[in-house]
Every structure is written in structure tokens, then in C-alpha cells.
Length: 254
Length: 269
Image (cartoon, rainbow over all chains, first blue to last red; front, side):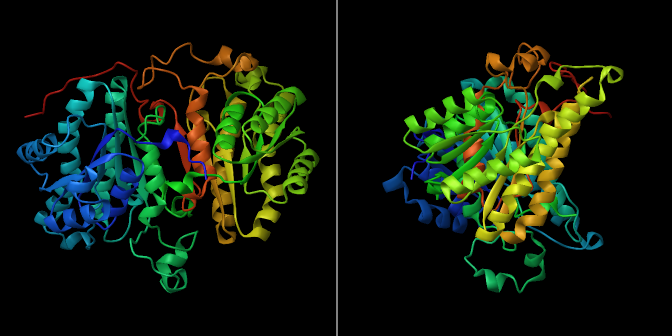
């Protein structure tokens, strides 16, 4: 089956940073399958091990990574120093800023609020600064931020998480406009209700939430992998500052 | 998982497929393995497009069609089903471009308004209606509507194009929500300014000469739409419906201040 060469990432190097959630291994697989060398940044070693297990160890794939909490410029420097030991150029930055949290607004501790904003939004801010500096110098880059549809909508108990997602969406638009002249494209993929497990549809449909989704199943990281590859490709040259929602039709829901 | 971006033998019906963005979509779809029914009002361009598809090793038919006439839209869909046996993807791309030349509202005649509604909005509705039954029967299908950034923002003295393209985006949402239960998805492609060949001279007159005012600093090229059309036609987009896929040089991401406006403000004490 012919797949257009436009979607290829051969010869490109990607940094994939995950704030949490279960999608990172398959997102890394999509980038690797498209031909990119992938450098993974996770908050915890466990998460890093999972992703590298999915795409191959540094010894056999050219893929590598580091576990570091990206909450200060020094932490970003540490991550990029590890990157520099393996690679000499970064073409692609993928930020998965979806560490989830849900609690009634009145019960949220300030520390919890700050932690959600830090993992999801502050990390995206700091890493985009560190990587963006390099992309501007080389006048090329593709940035894709993974966000939730809650960037656009409200949900009971979702305030802290939604604010972080709306922040990343706004960062996406701002950087697209600010960096467009440097041949850097910045887009977002908005996911709906997802599960990285393969749960039979009949079983999923026992959940009211799933019956609410127009396509009547949860999303899977596989549903966004090919789109991620395209948005990271050179061929994606005229789309920038846009969220592309892959959410089973939720955004059209009345 | 990237093999899902292929279109191995899928049947795509595209309106306005002989020229401009439509022709570029035809070329990319054929390269990705699609067979095509190509519709357009003029025979020459669609036959030439069909010949290109065949030269790429895929099958194609050219079906002269004015989609603003529902009987002709019905005949297009019937001809494609008869020839190929099924339709996997419908791309509603046909649009009157001449009406996008800015015209003050008081100079717009009823007939001009109606002609744009007929082709740009009713045409997409007629073709979607015609294809819906067979897609429901096969339990799968994809409808792709080509809208415009003008469907989301205003354009000075651009009444018909803005209103009909806004309608197309809403048609997409209603189709997606209504047909999801039958395995049918619907999405919009939202192009910004992408100058096309000399055949579209009317719209070129209305377009800016450069993309200097866009965040990317340049206008789009027709080829930019190709991989987006292939993605939305392919199984790789199966979980995406009711959405817009924008390619506009970043115009819609900004717009509250003119290009080049870059203020500096210190934090207040």
C-alpha cells in the first residue's frame, strides 16, 4: 500500500517530552516508524523505560532519552545536554502535556494546582524556549503539542487540567505567530477520551461516557500517530498555530 | 501504524477536481493509491485530470457535473457507484470563485447570491445527500468538505464566499454528528490564501500578491493541500470527525494585531 514520501521523517531528530499519561510509547513508535531518531524526556524513569522498550534501546535504534522533571531552565539544560551527547540537531519537538487531574474546584490545594500547571504548561514553556532557540538559529523546526479537547470546553472537576490545556493551546498559537518567519511550524493535536489499552468496543460501550462519543469508542494513541508524523514533516509547511482535534466527534457535540 | 495513510484502491469522488486545489488533491490521492471519479463543469480539465490518474496506474472517470443542480449531483454519485461499485470518500471541493471578488452589498444581485449558494453550499449538500445512502449501507465512508478561512472570519465585501463557506463548516458538523452512528465521518479542510493556476484568474485578482502579512511570511502552494486530503481520506483519520483541518500560514492563529506589531511591556509594579 503506497504511503506518500511526504509523511517521512527520515533523517530527522525528534525530542518527545511526556508529562504523563499512557500515550508516549505509541507516539514514539509513530515518530520512529516514520524514520525519525527519537530522544525521549519523561518525568520518571519508569515512564522512560516504557517508551524505550517500545522503540528499541539506544544500542539498536539510535533512540535514547532522559528522566528529568522539566520545571526549571537548569533542568531543561540538563535534558538538552543529554540530547547533545547523542545528536547534533533537533528538527522536531513533541510536547505531550496531558498529566491528568480532576477535583472539585473548592478542594484543590494550591500545591496541586501548581503541580498541574507546572507539569503540563510550565514544562512546555521551558522546553519550547530551550529547543526554540536552536530551531530559530537553524531556521527550521516542527513543534507539535498534544492536548486535550478540554482546552476548549469546561467540565465539572476539570478546572486545573483544563486551564493547563488551554494554556498550551494558547502557547501553540502564540509561538506559531512569533516563529513563523523562522520556518518553524507549531501545531497541536487535541485528543478526546482515550485509552492506550485495547478494550473491546462492546465492553467500552457499557460506559455512559463512551456512548456519548459520536463514534462510540474511546480514542487510542494509534488514532493520532499518523497525524503526528504528518504535522512533524517538512510537507506540513502551511498549517501552523492550529489545533487538529481527533476526538471521535466530541467537538461537534451540542 | 503509518501504513494506514495509504489509499489502496479506495474510491474517491471529488468535485471541482479538474483545476486548482482539486487537481492537486487528485494527483496526491492517486499517488497514494486511490481510484477517482472526477467531477467538474468543464469537460476538458476533468478529462485531463483523469488521464493523469491513469498515467499513475490508477483508474479514473471524468463526470461533467454542475453540483448546483441536484439532479446532476445525483447522476454523479450514481455514475461513480455504477463504474466502481462503491464510494469510500466524497470530497466536496467545487466552488464559485468569481464571487469572491469584493463587491459592495448594494451591488449584489439576487442571481449572484443564489448562484454562489447553489454551488458552494447546496452543491456540497446535494452530493453528501446523494452519497449518504450507499455509505450508510456499507457502514463506512468519509465526507470531506473544502471550506475556507473566510468561513471562519469576515472578508470585506466578500459576502457569498464567506457565508457559503461558513455554511459548509456547519454542514460538516451536522453530517459528522448525524452519520457517526453509521461509521461515516465528515471533516472540513480550511485553506487560507493559496493562489492557483491562471484558470482561476478571477479569484487571483482578489488575493493578496504576497504572504508578507502572514505569520509564515508566504502564501500557500497548491501542493500543501495534498497530504491533508490524503490523510483525511485514509484510515489514519478514522477517529477524526466534525473537525476542521486548517492550512493558512498561521493567519487564523493571529489576527488581533497587524503583522509586525510586536509590543514590549514591562510587568506592572
